[in-house]
Length: 387
Image (cartoon, rainbow, N blue to C red; front, side):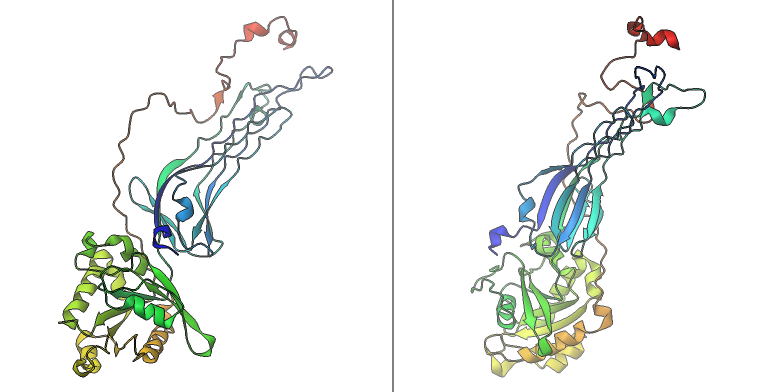
């Protein structure tokens, strides 16, 4: 997928449908002069529903769809006719989509499974017709309920890719090269920093027809948690990974220092990331084969498994796959549960709009056609004299 088509952040305005108004109607027929109330209920407004779709890998289809609105419910009718329900609006999103409030940044919900349905905004309930308000002492109620108002809010959709293994490292650490060697993915590879501008996913084949998913994100630099480099834009993509594979080149002056910097950036972004299983791969071991560090010494010093690899010559690749599969097979690494902290959003300037009038809720006298009930204008018709 071209890098300019990978969209993992969109902000949209959503509004559900309002409920239809109940009907105020008194049954009248030639031989039924006092038929009584028979006003029907209004229809329900349409919902805004999120549905997970495993065939989607990006939020590109929502980039230019800034307003998503469901339809309103229909009004009730005579003879206890119910109003038509509003049409629900279905928004298909990739698995791993997280939804935040667009004004406050608070977490709302997430969609993780294919076919999972989440009602983002509920449609308003339809109002009750006057048939519901008949009593022994009020046999001809001349009022009905309006429908509930619609719900509206700005929402932010963020995609956090689902993968088993996430590659973490500085620019030019060999992440994209490793992904291209162990999977069929074709990420862009070049000899300059930040070659990878969008996350790349690859399926790594293992023994006995088994496989796991590996995610390559753009390089992390010191200060990424504060927004430097590509910063927070892609750090969120490793939140769902079961195992984190740190990659430091063998040509680095201080492997221990670079690993601590990477670990510190993850901790600043989300301290929960430190609870994930971690491995360290020393890459580019074919450049200086005579000056390679001792993996056992590094492992005891850093407190995590260390492996020496070379994506070009294939050195240590089978061992790396075995170590990754061993970590993925552990029961504690198969459940990926994270808490989504609120995000920072720009404060919206609220303008005072005096033209919009809030609908009065509850049971009110019917004034849906912007007029008052003046019974004097019905005198002489005949029905008023038979009460």
